[in-house]
Image 1 (cartoon, helix red, strand yellow):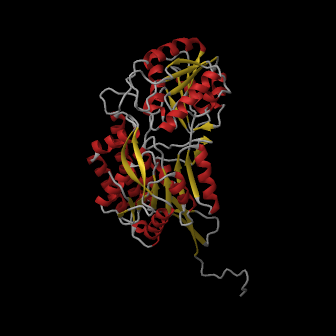
Image 2 (image 1 turned 45 degrees about the horizontal axis):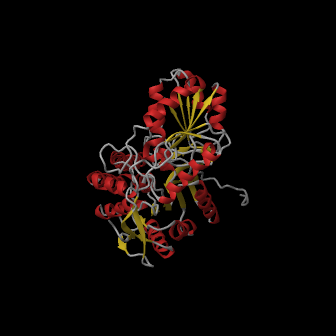
Length: 492
């Protein structure tokens, strides 16, 4: 495990010599001391990225040349799959099978954007028809510049790949600041960059806290774009910092996603997708369908089956065979979730299942999967993102009622609907005010499809060709082709 920062193609000690305690959430033990970068380290990293963009070969490479490096990163990720997944488990707490799936998706992301980088060479420009025949115009797309990326702790390396892969494919250079809670695999990406001989300064990795490293990155005048995934409150600060220099900003923020289940749905399938939508990754998923709306006719049956199946989930260390629910990532996050459950009880909600530390697990940040019912529509747990294995379930009377309740949120990241009536399901899908909608399922995510939300869930889209466009500028080049003088001022 790395104990230095990766800046300008070299491993360097933090300027102030600080460290971050990396804690295994299953044991509450410190497993590593990661480097703690500060403003001076950020400045060095940004200047390295600036030089690499302004004077280095990376933005001048063809897309095909950049794709060679991206595919090499993907191959290294695959080669180190087991090691990287185990680091994710130790760092984040998620079950090993989930971590292995994540690492496979990381490799897939780099390979996908390698292909899109190659396609840039096939469509280098677009000719624009003009109304004035003496002029011709073409549009080219160019790399945006230096990117400052700040990534979250819930999918440590996967969320890094969602930003690094398209940015590098576009020809940008980057300074990456991963979450201080889960820095290990981000630093290993620096090892991979070194192993594949990525040009110096193209990717720089500075671990540190939000205040000491994140803020200096967002405020640095040599950064052209900020790409952030995290909470709404921090997203506001990132956006305000970007406004000082009119930086381009893309934000993927919180969610309180609804899942509408109609009475014609198969109850067993509904319960499976409810659980996958909220208990996967300990519910620490921005798109988690944490508000479940069930048509009144099957409400009691769905809640009953949901509680029965939640009780069967094996909770434990992510490295143990059969574990389906690991620990919460940190004590701070654990306390936030349990405080929200306590508040729900005070506000009159019923804890239909869970809500407590599992028996026999006296250390580690473990929490039972929790099912809440009976909360009001204006209650905290119904309105606000809890970011844990806590699902709120309410009945609805008809389609209009379901759509109203689903859209009554300041968030709009994702939504889901289940019904055997495909026409109705598609109608409801179109009525949702959300950037991602699932029909008869919850949470499937594909690198080819756009990811992002409405309202306070963010700005812009990641993944797909939309993700690549995040890191490209559009330039118009218009030429006057006539031998005749323009003649506006100089008359002949």
